[in-house]
Picture 1 (tube, rainbow, N blue to C red):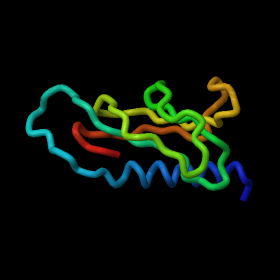
Picture 2: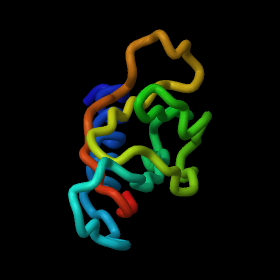
Picture 3: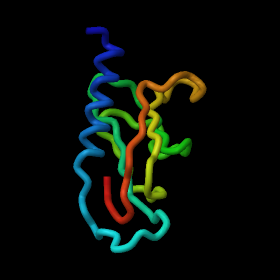
Picture 4: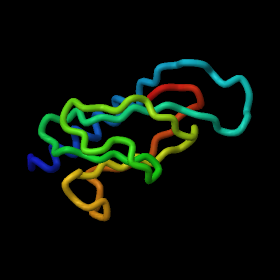
Length: 109
């Protein structure tokens, strides 16, 4: 398997793992407008380059090497767009991987 594909698959697997197991903090009791959800991102692929991770176009993780992660960052609850870029390349280059994730108010991901 090509190394770039293997790296992309690792990053996807990690993003899925991080977003699939939210830690419930407090459940919203009403249908008020979207509040804040908390997202932590990291690079957990040993074969990947350092990465920049963006949520909704905002840089959240800057030049993260293998095993580095951010502290939880507050984002507007709802659908977020996550893009993982090679930190050594311009942000205008296509991302290594990207996708949407739905996050709920007062939950950690």
